[in-house]
Image 1 (spheres, one colour):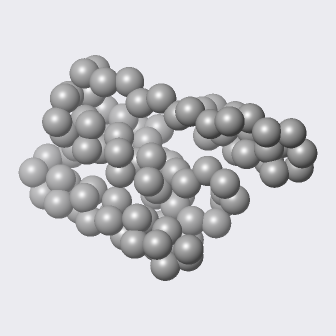
Image 2 (cartoon, one colour):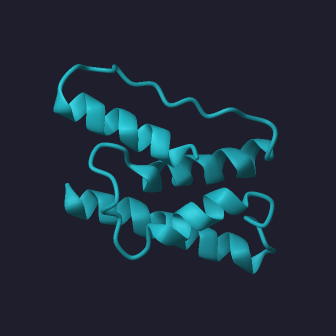
Length: 96
């Protein structure tokens, strides 16, 4: 699982590096840019939420549809118990 997450993280970094060569692609989304930098080199702030994968999807959607051409929805089943509570807190922390 860790190698899969590292692959996603490095893919996000590669995408950002390639796009940066063609201009400041993340200048108009500073919160996402800040989040992506906080994930590098370790993506260990979250247990259930995978923000590197979300960053990757957002960058792809932005490139294809423009900044205002999409809305990314994160859907999950809110379960009871400690795991559900942790996941809920991670989601709440990520949208601040």
